[in-house]
Structures are given as structure tokens and as C-alpha cells.
Length: 202
Image 1 (cartoon, rainbow, N blue to C red):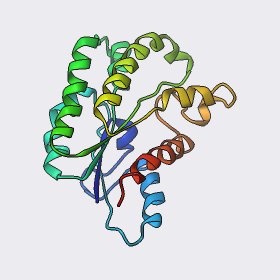
Image 2 (cartoon, rainbow, N blue to C red):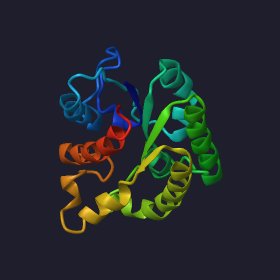
Image 3 (cartoon, helix red, strand yellow):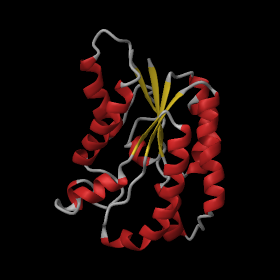
Image 4 (spheres, rainbow, N blue to C red):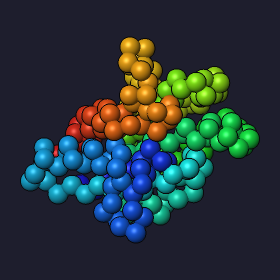
């Protein structure tokens, strides 16, 4: 079974672009290390196609080459947080209507290719400099949740999970900057995502 992971820096996690087998050092690598021992007799190929800094439109532009043309059995997608970050960091205005069109088209392209689709919800933890982004991020999450639940085979929510944990455990345990997960955060993403993946392993 071939599974392609696609998204931004949270997926990328310093993977070696010159090595197709490189999974980076984030949740994809953690997930691989957990999944392979469970199915030692199964041929499972994991491919990391995350690219740091990507927005939804960037993944949409490369979905044919980096997902569909690889003919995977499944695709795992986490994307969206940069669309908000880039508005505050670079002044790039987030058009929610265009975001919705792009996100829906991205999911539809993957599904129309006959690929099992697992959508992982992006998240934003309560780092002080990220609090002002929350209202806009919530609007984006509503779109991601609505379309993800409608079109994906599996939708895994993380934002409420991480923010709920942050009420009793300092958020920096899971992400120093509120966006990029620590190893503990990556383990939590992997542990939750793997449950959805295992439902479809035969």
C-alpha cells in the first residue's frame, strides 16, 4: 500500500528533497516508525511530499505531480495554517471564498483519481503572537471542517484537541511557536492519524 503525505512544513519537517525515501523528522516519520512494526508482512510505502511554506493553492498546483501521478492508494493531507500566517506575516490577504474554492477543488481532484483521502485538520495553539490570528483561523477551520467531512474518507480534528490539552499543559510542550509541533506534538498527530489509516489497511 502506497500512502502519500502532502502539506506544508508540518509535513515536510526537513525531509531530504533529493531522497524520495526521506520522511523528514516530524509526524510522518513517527507514524512510519509506529506503522511498519504493526504490519511486518505488508508492503507499505510512505512518501513525504510536504513543502514548507505551502498554502492550499500551492498544494492544488502540484497535486497532479506530487500525488495523483504517483498512483498512491491513499493520500494524507494537512494544509491551511499558512494561509492565515501569511496574511499577518507578509500582508497577503486571505480571500476566504477563494480559499474555499481551492480547498474543495484540491479534495475533489484527489477523490476523482480514486485515491483514499484522509484530511488532517490544521491547528493553531495559543502562543501570544498567534492569538490575534484566531478569529480568522476559526473562519478558515469552518471551511476545512465542512468540506473535509463532506469529501474526505476520514477527517481528523486537531485544533480543539491541542487547545484543550493546552488548558492543563503548557502549549509549548506541543509547539514552541504555536504552529510547528515539538516531538511530543508530532507523536500526538501520528498517534491520532494512524487510527484512521489503519481502518483502511487490508
